[in-house]
Image (tube, rainbow, N blue to C red):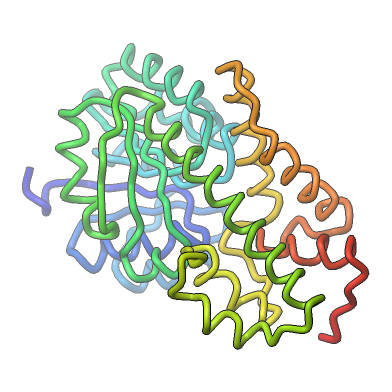
Length: 298
């Protein structure tokens, strides 16, 4: 299908969604958007996006991308507001970039199929910096035929695109990634606590170790932010808790135990209790500083 003939819709224009959608506009796609607060998407409208109501977007678009907060939001958009499954034309495609529930993805795939609509879970891996650079990775679950249709589109804002298998498999792969990230971020923060107590210059330590065997994307992305006391979110603590809960929910379904994730979730629960819901997930440093009697000057 020619690029000019594809009508794309986008729902969910937050920290990650807005820059990704922007790449579609840069690449000449016909993009319609909707949002609760139009003022927050003026930048995209100025770049050529059409602003429509959710119902208008659902009626007119061939492919609709979702990047909302949680499984309940995905269900709401598909079944109620605007109710994509009841409004989209037959043959339409829903691509869900939300980190959601694999079990829900399987359900939505089956329900959409009954309406001759195609559903693909396609969570995005990568921080806001990578989203702004068009360098995220996409791991998808669904039908090969549909993946082949969307691949040229998602390639506009991603460095890699992989079909992991059937419905839900993209989200299983994303939760795998979140397990690794949770442990890496917690490890970096524990290292910083240790280094502080041992009297190390943490900025010098970062420079010495950022290319070592201890290095990771977590270290290189989040340690500089923590050193600057930049706790602004790439993902908020409340959304990160959602991801941890999804991991544990699926673990129960798979009858496995993930003790490290259970413990990490406990620390984030404490951070939530202390008013950290809207901070970035690197704000875990605050909880561990408190546990270790460390008072920060800034």
